[in-house]
Amino acid sequence: MTDFDVVVIGGGPGGYVAAIRAAQLGMKVACVDQRKTWGGTCLNVGCIPSKALLESTEKWVYTKTKLKKHGISTTGCSFDLEQMMNRKNAIVEQLTRGISGLFKKNKVQPFCGRAQVLSGNEVEIQMDQEKKILKAKKIILAMGSQPTELPALAFDGKIVLSSTEALELSEVPKHLILVGAGVIALEMGSVWSRLGAQVTVVEYSDRVCSSLDPQIASLLTQSLTRQGYQWKINHESQQVKTSDSGCLLFLKNRVTQEVISLEADRILVAAGRKPCTKGLPELGIRLDAQGRVDVDATYQTSLPGVYAIGDLIRGPMLAHKAEEEGIAVVEMLAGQSAHVRYDIIPSVIYTWPEVASVGITETQAKDQGIDYTVGTFPWKANARAIVMEETEGMVKLIADRKTDRLLGAHIFGAYAGDLIAEAVSVMEFGGSAEDIARTSHAHPSLSEAMKEAAFSVAGRTLHL
Image (cartoon, rainbow, N blue to C red; front, side, top):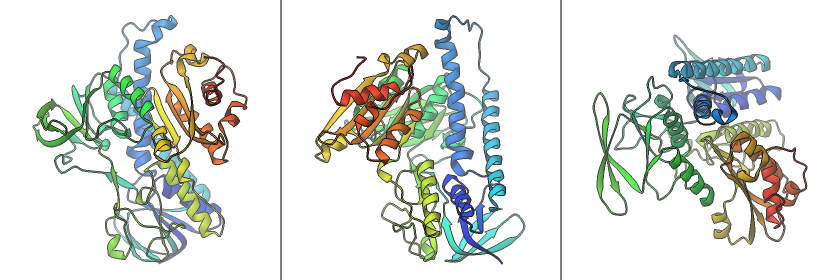
């Protein structure tokens, strides 16, 4: 039996970051994951490989549609799907090796195997040919989540796919149906649409990305429609009939009750994810009404000595949220003060243009009875965006009318995922729209759109 101060179960963004930070704080740490490679869903079959394919396909579209205007001939250009996949796999391998290097540097003991919590201070690991018991003063659960399977659309890995299989297709589908209109669906749809697939989105609710600010969601929907997306909004998937070559999906319109069918060769089911909590209730670990692990303010579960973070617990299922919790929980265990501002965790959709948001939407401001003001600035009036041939989109800021405190930021445009960090920083320190407006922004840069939107909050936009 090996003794540790902390055993972390799960090697994804929350788990491996928690392990490294705990080691930095002087703890003896083990990290366990059932995969042979580190990084969890995010690095292996999620955030990183999807972004690699999005980057490749964005470059393909840019080559076909925008280089001619720059005076660059692209006659005869083509894409190589196998090479795109090879590049994606090489990036994943590079980054997983990087985590192994970080473990070695920080003296985190890695274990590859299936972990089972035996008690509040014991973990059993089933490795290839042996079992090992780790004794720990504290255990941190960071097993993440898995794709949600719909009753009418069971995954078969060939025709009815989860996001994992959608990252590994060896040929471009002729017609790809996306069940769900959230982040995963729209990003994976973008990859295959750009390479020539017809994409149809089936969404149960009455609009795309219901968590987004409605104005931004509308711009995104219009943009994807121009890119070739077709929509079946307010439709419920009822039944699928599959064959070796494709499928027939039956849908019911939730308004008219009409039943229709769509023929396709692949269906990607992206109807959300669920926490990996199998076996936890039997240990006395309480789950909440949504099936998530119930934790207190220090991330401790109902089983003393056992903590949980990331997709297992409340809050958005985002890699950076899990990282923040991983740092916070081990700093608390070390007696330090730590916190996570759940109200200002940014979210990004890596379509093109990108969508990024933080804080409340205009709808939420109205619902909460907040006296607010809005400032906007279009990408088409930003000099850098014009130079880049990326004039689609806008910045939208929401501020308290009386105090000018920044309450929300919503961006639809090129590199929105990078630009949102400025708003997050300002909101972290309780800053105002005026703080952004009075901050010098390099010219010409996309970030100037943030400054102009901040000026717009006060009704004094300069370049529009």
